[in-house]
Length: 523
Image (tube, rainbow, N blue to C red; front, side, top):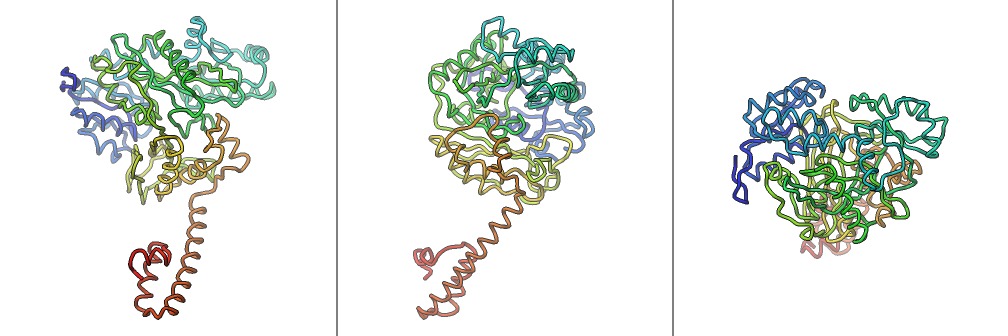
């Protein structure tokens, strides 16, 4: 084990049971803490960034995740071969699989996350709902049991009143979820939701919830140790979703004031204590138009959007996960937590907006990453990397921080304008349009905002290449006009053709004005 800053010992080696940007993110924390990291990879990921970054790497099978990243036995074997005494699951794959957590424990490997028992209690949506109802905590009206019979589904839906939501009991991320607006849609939605849940989570169970009209999706970050200390680290606004999948998150929420933040945070802590929760976790709520909040689910893992909390609160969540798993006490009390400024995250995907955001695998031929004050990019790719078809098409997360939301929005607009990815289609242009939308600027958003704007045409899904070509053509015409004006002015001023040609070259390169050239001393 390695010594930590408190004088104790952490782990001698950590295996990261994941891929892409989250694997690199965890490995960076390990490197800063002086702990060697171990990567695992499928055949198609042999040259992936997380494999290159790790101190050592082990192959675990073919491209199919069911034969590689979802194989408990192969990952445990890799940890044993490497001599890793701890394992970080990242998010997705088996991060919320209690059998995986138990297998690590049985193998003498520390699982950097909550206990298998906490996962089972909070991982099942129906079980967690039942637990909270018994404790008198607010949940969205609905069932707290799985619905296996279509006749029962029809009866409950009629009692709740349409519209209703059919949801998979075992998972999240928009899988196994259907909005049902009328009885005529129910039968097909039930079959589709069960089929999708079976494919995604190997469990077809579904339950029903009353649909809330235009709610906000707010989540509270929890951090707890094995010594009974559990705190909340503010909230994240996760209402900007496409097909029930988050695409842009921010911290803090533009909706919450100090009182609502405190009440939601204290409720989240109560929920965590019901599960004897340790490590990092997130309690998700829906907030209606009257500012009433309801428990939605608990994610028993690190969230994709955790960086916005990190930059606002000033706590490295991955490092704290590692310290907690090693038995360390939290160094913060609730009164120590302060939210400073505002942060926004955009999830950059290899997907084609012009084809319904369909995944766009292929070779990344150019990659220009934005930088500058308040900009962070968590990436899992590099120029020359072949984006595979077999996995989630997330390339990177672009995170910005500002002293307030207005500055953060301005920085995100600037950072998106600097971001370039060529060779694959991306959703960059979609985000460029989203962050200049007047309602986004005002913070007037809800979970249906993006789908509504796309349907209305307020957000275009045009391919980036078309929009960029139009912009380049307009720029070329403007430059040609400026060059003509510059040459005419040079002739009137008696400037030599040689100097005029030099100025024309500067105009070509920078798109500057005569006034700018004069200020720079070129004239």
